[in-house]
Length: 326
Image (cartoon, rainbow, N blue to C red; front, side, top):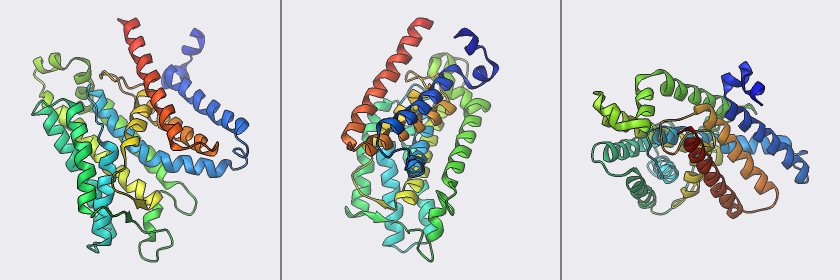
């Protein structure tokens, strides 16, 4: 095992992330063997998994930044739906151009990120409290703004706005996957190669020490939540480009799934340690898991149970690893 760990490729990728890739491959093989017809419909299941990865991936990338500070954001799912509902209402009822509606969707997510970041960083409200409040605000705003009506976005067959679906798929090519990987690369550069990213990680390790060294900790903590809100807005664009319809009052389940993918990938819930690559792999595992559960004939309730177990196991593993290190 030690020889395997010292392999240059393994050391470059990271032993834990190599294990996650192995889990992902093993999970797919198990589904092919255990679920009748899963292998035969492999391409359909692969595309369904990708469709789930797109929006969940952006949510997970965003929450990676907030968790890296030692905080959390439980509002990302409902915020994503709120963004989509407001943008959809602007498009359907106010007859705004689709491009303008997309900008509004992203701006709404950014506003929530600014609000959360300001209240947490500058008003010292605990992240758990403010994100739970924002979750309810997002649900309420989305419902009130749309008069509790679902909103639909153009299908690929739409002669005027059919281009919208090209965001996730263009003539069978998964453009959404390319855009998601590009976003992950940008997030990785921000996290590991910029001053803001390094300070965000340092906040999770020892915020007081960072503050005493003369760093404006409030500024960088707020940046982390602004990125999280921005990613929720972008996730909303990918969600409606994929599924076209969004309803008020939903989004809670995606909080847990995004956090599960993030923590499973190696981001510590206590902050200070974050892995963008691990988050990407974790999102694929969560997405493939939900596709396998649905293919097996089980409902969303089973998926929620499994996701909850994954979160517990991932956090327990993180806590155990830290204890051994200490």
